[in-house]
Image (cartoon, rainbow, N blue to C red; front, side, top):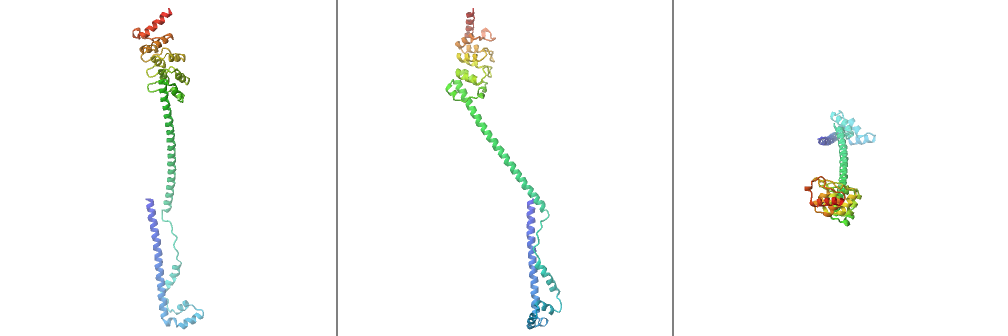
Length: 301
């Protein structure tokens, strides 16, 4: 709205000045025409002005045509007097200095304020865009790093489960890998216990893997190794401080788990290392477990 009013004022001033110039030009033309008419009338009147010889003689005597005309005029013409008085003023009229219309100072101040606001807003937007670009770059870098960690974790679990020591050694292990678990709470050591590679399990334990870490079913790596029948893995875990009789959510020890999986060698090993059936009743125990317990008792007699 302010810009529209400023435009109207500028147009009005422009046409106002043009109108003044045209009016002055018309007045000047009228004055000049009136003077020429008076001069011609005086020249035609021989008695009032005199003959051409008198005029020439007056020039010789140093008189000007204006003085002769003035002396020859018997009565001052009021129109000519007014014209003669107005003519110098008309010739001296200069173009008036254009003044700012009312409210121009306020309009300029508002315009300057708007420019400052636009500049500050542009600077603010630029900083927001730069921060957002930096944030997105960091998010992208973090996402790339997370993807790399996830891929390494997946490769680790595959190698540990398969007992693939060659592929395992190609993975750049970190402490975060050995502490991490899947949706069932299984750590990399649980997978290694199932895979049976004591070398992989040793590396994980050296990196800080928790030997008695339990999954969602409260089973430790020893439960997994006993179920899979890996006697050497059970030996490694016990030597690294694993509990020999931890209970899962079904109150089964690794010995009972090995008995249900029909792992006779593992049952024998665990019984020889102090494993028991926990608090389970004899009728609930697998026969393989009962047989190994009786063997141990008979050997001790």
